[in-house]
Length: 420
Ligand code: EPU
Image: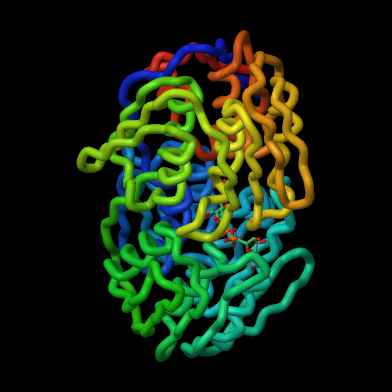
């Protein structure tokens, strides 16, 4: 397994181009299953999760061609059952279920398990399918949904932690080809849901209200091919903004969408980070000493759980106490012990991490446990004295396009050690 070797202490400077959003492109690729016509998706990041979704779609019978930063998908004839092991490997692949149910009136995928960040149930996805008239059963590790007719209805998709992003995406996709009107209440408002709705509408769907808690889908008989460019990755942009602040640098995020990043930018400003907007670009620089802040993760437009770990790395550098509370995924604190290995002082108290910031960090070998935890360790390594080795880099390759290359372009001393 590859690792990253980081010699810390160099302020990041320069420009970085923000890639297309991972969490947008995965459901959008899955949505291409809703039509037999070709779909072309642009600004597709080169990530292992994207290639993996491509493999799942190919397995289902779709033709998938990656061309530079675009992918062309044509699902002329498809089967309704995802490969057990393929689907199980990537939790995001649950979003093939809505399109399969919509198009074929049946879908079977392996039941996704929990992962290091939490239990990750799919009860709300299934509740939505049932509301459309599907019968849902679990057999031999597969979850099956089948319906003779899908009929629109009202469904409340609020759960324990609020809305569900992929649950909203799944029900929205299935409902595009249902008879009549579906109204999703407590829908996720994330920009990725809006992006998916825009793609579906470009395919001929009739969706209104995406981006608000009430999404209305009027079913249509069929969808057609479409072309779409995915939105920039707000989590990647936030990660580089935090890395710039952590290293006392100055970085321009090219092609970021500040309007998708209010909660993160607001918190960074509270920490003393300067942010200037110029068109689609954002210039981020540290304005002096960092200040501690309290952060609670929430569904959009609150502070994203996907930036919690990176923010914690930054708070390790701010003298004083910051309290970071995780409200979306119960065990998303695997980075805490590794940040402490670098010299941080963080204690977990229930859903909160108490960060006593301001101690100098010093490089050490650390182990990444998930995608965003890995990003946090890279940020801490960039700010630490000495050398940090981040192991299990495959997590990063799932969700950050060319992270080490982009950081090198900003002046970081970071090297990939390939496993022999
Ligand atoms: N939940 C339920 N029941 C469900 C579905 C979700 O109780 O049926 C709960 C979850 O356990 C969690 C909360 O609802 O407590 C929110 O989960 P959500 O369903 O919104 O997460 P997701 O759709 O599975 C996507 C992203 C995650 C991101 C979350 C939250 C993709 C592929 N994944 O997951 O991204 O953290 O939304 O914003 O879009 C990442 O990129 O690192 C990542 C984990």
